[in-house]
Length: 216
Image (cartoon, rainbow, N blue to C red; front, side):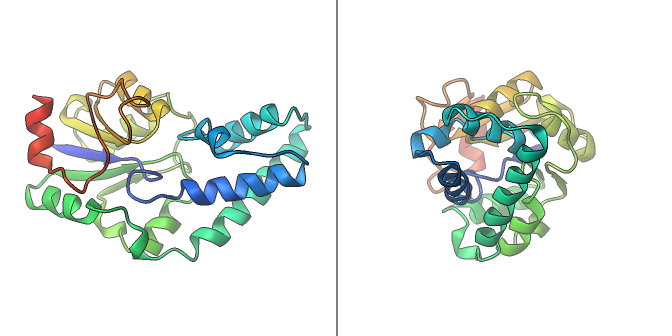
């Protein structure tokens, strides 16, 4: 019996990946190396500091901790400039209908995102009121694939992990769901998200009812 759904934010509800990419690319340019869209795939679902480490690895750069913190802060400022211009038009197709279907069936809804900017994004998109529980990067200390973010959401929703479905677009997020004993629906392409219980390109042509049938 599914009682709750937990959504990742970036790439599931809205495509903020492009803004992360632009901000990281600008940072790499300042360090005199190129950061490609393919490189950016490695950063999906990963914490800010770990993302910076991967970026520096790609550029073969070595920085001390203090400089790294400064760079991460600069990246976030650039990213915030982008997201503060976001509008509800940027919500991915089918998401609102899906959230409203969940509400009509009294299914609890939570956000489980590594983003420390999740509240800002939800406010910009006017989506905050759909979520009973919001677990973001300010409330967790362990990055996906650790299941902390999803398990905290289940605790606050007062449901068991096996009574939830997680919606994720990143491999690390799907592994986090599996590690937490939560069913997982991958949003994106099956070749990247093969470990999920079910994969769909998005919410446009899928209903909660259909997902339950497929998972059963």
